[in-house]
Image 1 (cartoon, rainbow, N blue to C red):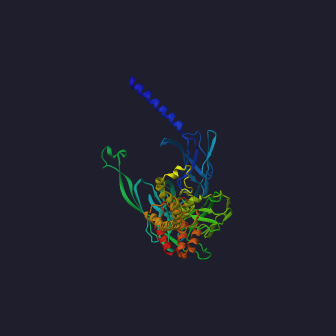
Image 2: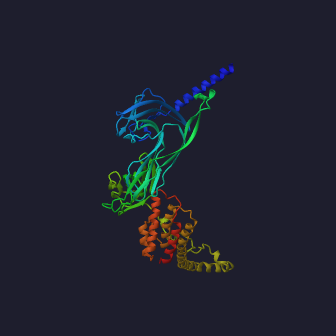
Image 3: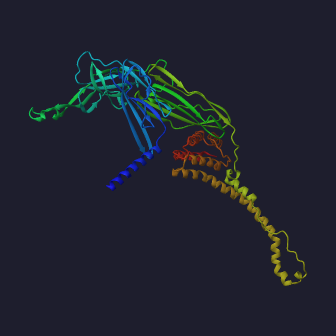
Length: 588
């Protein structure tokens, strides 16, 4: 018994500790979202609405919600949730509603508001379109049937239409499978998960299973969309033989009957795009789109770069959004980044966005104006062509810090050899003979005889040294030139060998190209631009076509560096090797 009490006490302490731990890690950031199970419904339909508050597990009151004046609202309780993922605690409470419209029209539901601990939080809003109730001609369609409808029966090529299937049933069903009609030049794409709700059709209550698709056409013409078909199992009660206690309904069993239900056929007309007033830059974009741009930073120093970003987004065929181009300007280099196209699906259909970026690198201080960028598309709402454009941007460039170059580093090898030779001081001999201060040194004949050869050598040595210096300067200069020439010829081999390895980055490749020109032509240019390289090559006998190829390669490499991909492996290595070989053949 004592052990049980100890276990209960330990369990209580454990739960208390867990509660305190959760309270310590609780997320105090409150947020609220409002959601509907669908954005289109009939007057007789029930729409499920959920208001979710993240950051708390309880509240003393229900939220107040705008836009529900023409709806019957039924509160269906609350639910709370607690999650701990990677030691991060999150909690939420959901308020569930069932709303039913009284009139047809388009409504703005929300925002929802609630005050918790003195802080008022607000949700988003949702649009809800209410249409007339589906009605038949008084014919009883039975306890289960399938209805198909289109948001518009007349559309343009590549325009999106919403194809909706509703399964009405008054019995228990399972194993539901759908077969869509197959029509050439028409494509179906599901845009959201199936939803279930209650509705009224021809005065009778039904449970409804709804699924929606985007229908896209690639060719004009009149189309007959065949019926869709749903296969399912209808559950029915099965009784006994009429004898015994098993005849009681309580003991009745259920049996499934396989059934196939077909929808109504639909006619669709696809129109060609109008040729009148079609813009010259129209690329096939159809839908509703918007454009926006930003320039960051708008003020820089010479030697720095800014980023221009343009985003085109909307509902429609975003794959036709073109790649825009920033016009070239004097003293302003423009490097385009790779465009990023993203597509997704929401309740309104397929939407997409394209992000385009450019690195702007000014070569001179001053004011630069980036003109508006334009794109044209066919607006499916207004049924006409439209052109949208960005706002002009201003780039201010201030004077940068003065560049200091280390002359010993930037000089070619042959110049560094010359400078080294000029600075080096060597001891080549003595210009003063020994001084004798005693007559004894002259009286020893044998001594004099031994010193005669030495004296002769001392007298001849200056002449020999002078001769050696002269020959060294004459032939040594030629050898230095020969060494420089050999190194010049090796410049091409070095860069070709590095290209062959295929592991050099764009940043290093750009440095190697500039270093190659400096060594090959004996230049002293640390910051060599693409157009300067083109001009220098042409002035040294290289054909215009080859020089242009060299210039384009440098521009592409600069683009990789300015757009943040300078450390990636250079993909132009093979082409660079070919261009260097052409330069070597043509250069004088």
